[in-house]
Amino acid sequence: MAKDPEVAEAGSFSAKDYQDPPPAPLFDAEELTKWSFYRALIAEFIATLLFLYITVLTVIGYKSQIDGNSDPCGGVGILGIAWAFGGMIFVLVYCTAGISGGHINPAVTFGLFLARKVSLIRAVMYMVAQCLGAICGVGLVKAFQKSLYTRYNGGANVLADGYSTGTGLGAEIIGTFVLVYTVFSATDPKRSARDSHVPVLAPLPIGFAVFMVHLATIPITGTGINPARSFGAAVIYNNAKAWDDQWIFWVGPFIGAAIAAFYHQFILRAGAVKALGSFRSNPAN
Image (tube, rainbow, N blue to C red; front, side):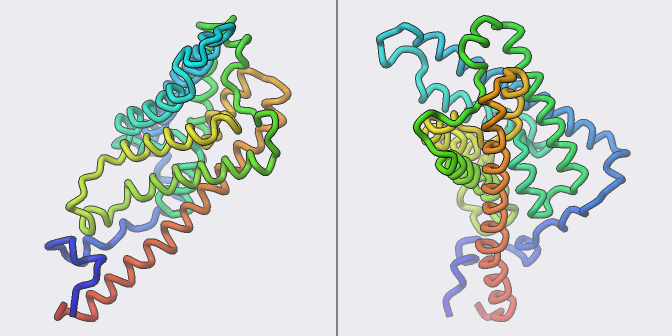
């Protein structure tokens, strides 16, 4: 009998290679007594601050470059903006993954919480740190480039003219699903056994997911897929339109993250569990 395709290419491994780490406790008060927890919060705060500073500067810089310029290829363009967002996520996840996990996004944190990868206390505190970091990052942009910041809408996410609320919400749901699904896949501990022949640098596919989603949804919502990014820009810009549309950039990403967590954990990973059961019950394989 042929080996199950889930394990046939994995080479030499033991059953423990297919075992996940134990689920994070829902409440873990001991985390509040550990320096590593606060170090992780600082890492999330600084990473989100840098993310918003670079990306919002790129957005308003692009708008200033094309203002009054008849050249349709002037400035970095949408492609450059997408690269700024995706590239910064790649860099920052690479830098902070070993400290905080490199979430830099409340939707990612929410998805990992639903999958019991982080505790409720850590999830809530991460989201607070991310939102504060985003506010400070956009605040730095306004402090250094106040005239351009005000003139070009502060990089705030709003639903573009001509698009319905449903279209904007759908764009945020699907875009966040792509991102969070990529996060789960790129950080799946089973890959080390099942796909050992495929080298994976987790920050790279995550950054590319952000890049690709921005290419698709910048014309619709300016691309949120990160509630902290949208919230930080709305707080500093403080515009009625940005606040009216703010719910889209929280509800959409959280729904998308929840769907991604369910899909990966209960559909895709269920297949791996069945493969392990088959392997254990058929030692002759």
